[in-house]
Length: 233
Image (tube, rainbow, N blue to C red; front, top):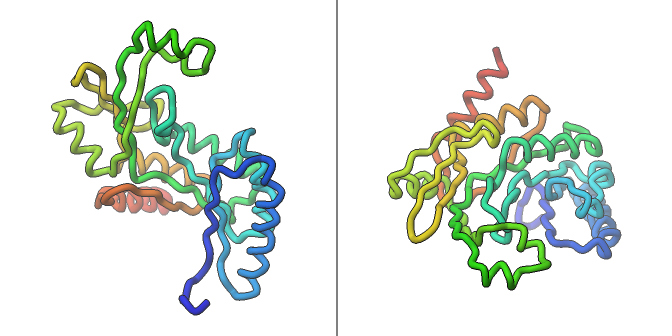
């Protein structure tokens, strides 16, 4: 209270299913304390999946003021294949599953202002042999990636002399190019992709938050305002 904050946002990740019941109790108790002190209480969550059901979105929706869905990290640094950080279907699925447990007026959808630049090389026979019997063995390419802010991501395409094209499936501009003995791939977050995401969020009458890496672009705000205008027509 002395810090003059308006509320508390709880973001505990990688909680085991064994600790789920204790985590939910923490959420309940924090909710009580926040409300006693007139603080807004929100809780961050992964997109709902069977393996994170112990976060108990239904109970969060009862005790918290807002339930935040982090609709990104569809593909992460540890993924076995290159892919979008946040395709449109990933966002849509996350919202749909969340609304089955939490009322729309309490749900905030978090979208990324960052992406990943992927690098792929074909696995050698030796590598495939070493991975035999593991999940990784079903993927023919070795991949690595790094997170880039929107400005840096767009510049990486320019620097490579590549051209991004709109991908209807992910609703993102996608580019790939060959260099350094492998293939680079990137699914961009830009004004066009964010506008598509904002439309989905507003169609479901949710609020919107952002997760960013690096600088924001003026285009992001332009995308937001263009969606608002569409909704006012």
